[in-house]
Image 1: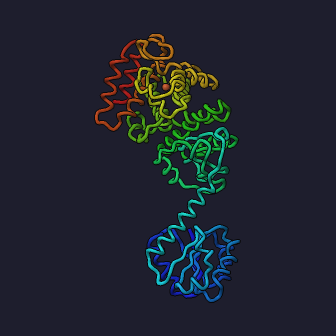
Image 2: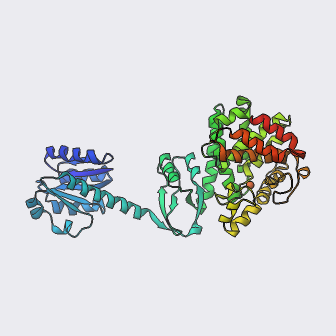
Image 3: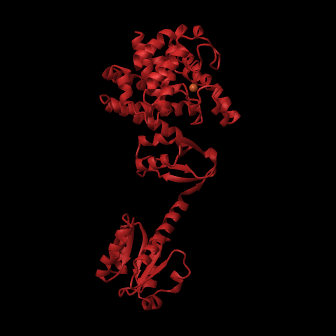
Length: 453
Ligand SMILES: [Fe+2]
């Protein structure tokens, strides 16, 4: 941020600058000797957040100069600095008495007075900027994109908004201007979950994300941490894409690549336990749970010597899509219809929860080259004795692949909740063994044990 100070006493430049530097580290003070220089700077060095004019200026009359500068500055705060006599004689009262944004600072300067007035001008400018960026938009003109998706880029060709009320949105990323990932972090800390894109630009964002992810897969092949981070971002894009757009050739390419990418990581780490040590588990949100489920299912396939290309692909797609139809971010934390927390959701949300395995299965069926992934997804909430949903299937009705998937996913979900507790892995396994060590689950539970312990 820059402020412009017009004063023909050079000693004063340093004085004002040192006060402002102490209190406003991000404010740069540009000093000029005359109105002519000021016009030059305003034309070529802007934008300036405020203008300070010395009332005793010899080259120009301060009031006349202000009127001359206004067309260049637009509506900006002016601070007139000077002895009372100069202010009274040379600055029109209209310019500061009746203006809510202009200020006067009397000489000799009191630091607190100067700081207070500068702060007031900064607040005014900030508020003005904020007001200007508020747009009244109908909710159906925009679509929500998960906040995390914005880490993929640092510049976008379209505007991005944050929701203020259901009809007011503030532009937080301007088309073509760089943005900082630290700003995205700041929204995450404020518990903002989505930023909004205009409907016609939403699909473009997802398509651009696919392109960026495909490039990153190629350039980071040998760095397994980067590959995993890329897979998590891909899961996020895939889940949003299938929910809002459906299955297309482009998203199929990203799914193929995301599943294939596990191969090098698995070869490098050999055992799931060592992948778990380096996997980013601080949040373990849905996208991270999806990728971790994929690694565990693959490890179990290898223990059972079933790791064919087809098995890997069907469990891979199941991992990416199983909860993709849950619109509400909190719903994926519900694990059964008996979970008392389900009561916190509306009847419509509960209905969508009951349906989500079948809706995700329908999506999976639209992918070519992934046979039976839809059955696995449809069955991911079933339990050995038929207490699961939606079809209350018992163990002998579940395929071996479904049993692997149910166990892998179940472990990851439980691990996400208990990961910081010592001994969690052993306890989770004991609990799971008590429930699942029967019928078609017997071999997969042994494979789970060998993978995690
Ligand atoms: Fe689910």
